[in-house]
Image 1 (cartoon, rainbow, N blue to C red):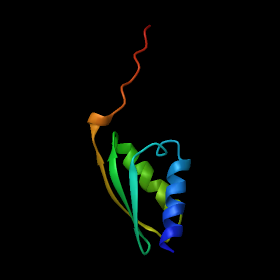
Image 2: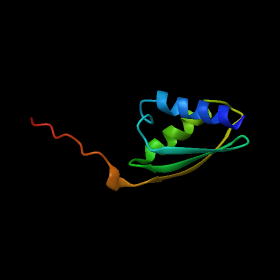
Image 3: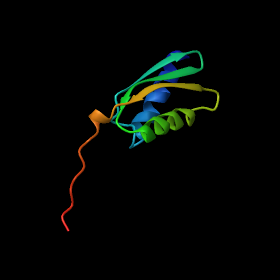
Image 4: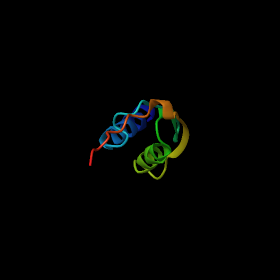
Length: 80
């Protein structure tokens, strides 16, 4: 069961364009899924949680994701 849940959660995170490239580690204990890692924006924490919740309503999601703005991607400047 643990391997199936882990695989389903990882597949969902990889399908989501917002979470696909994020360094998120997944731990599963029964129906408890814990997300661990660092992201560069707070909205990505919520995106990752929502993505896991969409796998099954029976899963409980705990986030240990932290926001580290130092890893943010530089934005392009647009000249007008």
